[in-house]
Length: 399
Image 1: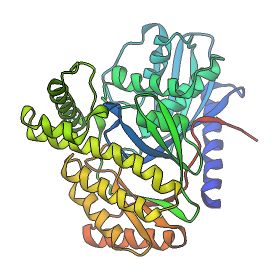
Image 2: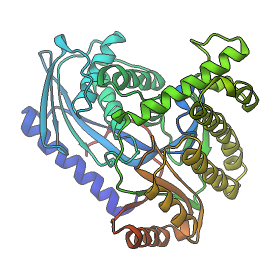
Image 3: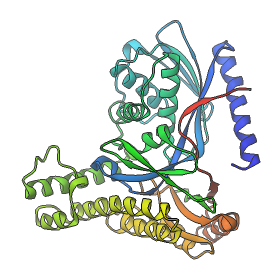
């Protein structure tokens, strides 16, 4: 973060604290945070048990929290200027993508895992761009889980926190996300991308060198995991997995593309739709790109890693059919600018943000030039951020 951004973080914490004191009537509360994320390689691989490589960003959700003596969850969002209240005794899945459904779903999910969640006052403030593919929903979920576990004086390993939050989004909110977003928000490590095995829920550190920065550009084309396109792609991936399983004589109910090779996919090509074949090819090749990316970063070969990002975008655009014209434009513009080693659409797709790997010395100039050229081409003013990689969720110490 720059000094300006650090001051902005402090201001956000104090503004949140002031609002929470007014609403809760107590000075005895704590503040927690959970970051958003950007994904570098391995998109839509997580619900196939595959590999992905996200990084936690210096955008986050803050939540101020104190326990109550009753069973009410009383919540307020500074961003939406909206209050909501739930009774823990009557929590039922909502099937709605409303902001309050995400923290309520986390309380429900933790209860399903045996955590004795008590009533609480929760006040939220976030700066993760909404609908931009930087996982604002997972940030809210993981911040809530971190707060509620602390209030309950309960401990849970961070991968299990991620699973509880994924369950909240899948089963309470009704959005069919994988585990990547919640995992990186809970487990992120400063200055490192994480190569995540989404089936084993294990990780490897993939250090991003200090002479490279991630530049995130918001196309301003919004997307939503619950709008149907994400779910349609997931069904096509599952269709490919079942066809491969039948060909190999495996159990269709449990087989995942994580275990398939391109040779396996081609052998089963005639037993699936053309769309399913393309989606499967993306999943298999993008998981492999994660392994190649780890090797490139550990040997300091940034150009190879940048080339893998470019390949990942082409696969996401062509095989997964999850890009859009303006995001493709952003990638082309980024790749034409000095200092850019690789660029791609990140997140669930169909809009949102691109991420570019840029030489640190040229990152600020790159960001300004990218915004200018995109504005000239589209008459849309994008939001561009030169980012740092942050730690995962945890408490915020108030001075």
